[in-house]
Image 1 (cartoon, rainbow, N blue to C red):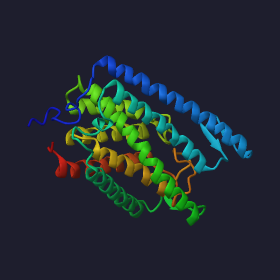
Image 2: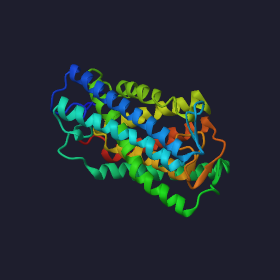
Image 3: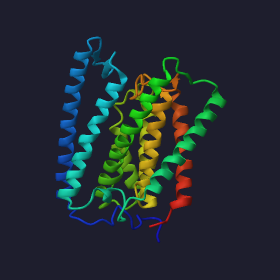
Image 4: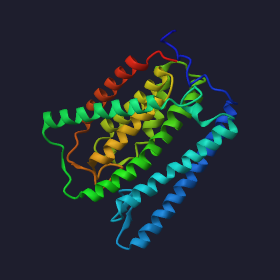
Length: 302
């Protein structure tokens, strides 16, 4: 098997009708459902703010102030249900194939791979944060505003909503877009770079960018590149689905950060001053180790 081209995998071993016209039609459907979801989110947020009475929407920050972080978290993540519905309709009725074909070329999703990716990525992430604490001895502290009951509620909501959010993104970027663009781009590095540019640019509006447009932007691009490259080289998006879920669940549960998408969720720790350059360095190590371990276990398998 040649290593300089995409091996037989979910990128080119799927049935259905997959002309460029159908992909364009599907993209229009997905974007339409995203628009509907965004409108529903905006209207729901306005209603929640009006019912609360003590909160308001800060246009400059791009989020509500004073509203329960639980409510905002659920409303924001509800958009992904519309995104998922758009993907399902597109793949099932336009491309005439099952949704799982965005993940694997097999007859079923191998959940063992998903959970392996989740567990390994989470383990590496935990070790790197311990190392960060030991080396720099700063950056985060126990969140005094989080009670056990608050954290348990957050834990439940994150376990329900975050895997949906990350999986939908994987289905779209590592599945739909990678398969579409992969019809013409056969080089794994180039394909991963293209997906990374799309994935990363759509995250450039996140509040974390205020720390450093350069380093945070590069971190998003690198994450998008590595998630795609792991999927391409292992032949399925299963490991990337697990890793992406582990990344976001870890962040939401462990770090309360006003300069992040999670905002003031009652996580275990408060993030202090984050050095964007060091954060990028840790991400390179994180994804590098994850890629190495993924290839040792699953590289070359079909």
